[in-house]
Image (cartoon, rainbow, N blue to C red; front, side, top):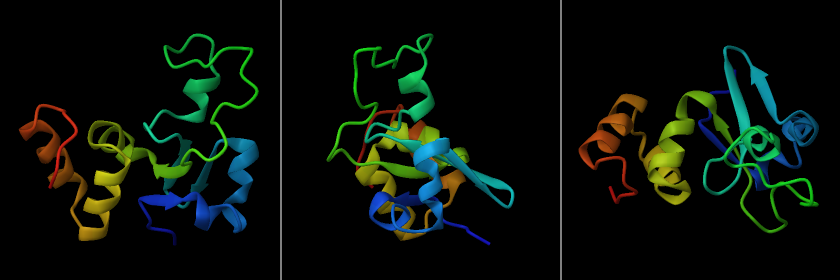
Length: 115
């Protein structure tokens, strides 16, 4: 079973997970991973005219070429947004739990921070 929290594009783009290019998300077991931009905004929010993150009808690409495109497990999306891409990757590599990541966000007032 897949237990990853963040899957960088360099990995998923050339794997069985590349289907997310068409679906925007993938479910494996009990978890769902969603395509996000570098700010943690989902591809669905970027494409939805009702969303404050909507990129507009004139945009040719929802996420610009060269911009990081990660698959983030849905239960970690709020952490990714609050701490930022690099910090979230760092704490995941350190093995910090979701509970501890949420405590870190609360401690720092939801500001992007260093661990």
